[in-house]
Image (tube, rainbow, N blue to C red):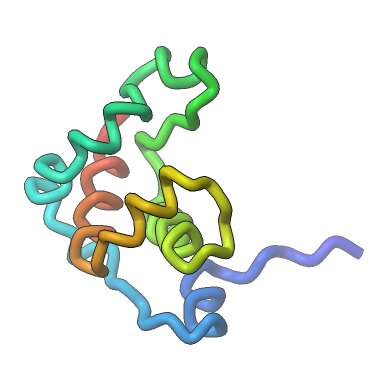
Length: 103
């Protein structure tokens, strides 16, 4: 039997992480912070061609969870771990809000 994955917030709570209200992310602040992200994660079709994942249009909670996984080391990728290590909850929420609003 295939079980559905638990909701992202339940995963965060189980991991002992304080939940982030993704709706509280400041889109303008996220746009300011996004320059470093868009260095590798180009916007639009170019990203898919280069093998770097497209990060626009992501669900905000999934985006935050992914950043937290890089920050804690449960998801491995050297450059992303270094970047995520510098981000606090406010920055993660702002980036999530900004990239969720992009197409």
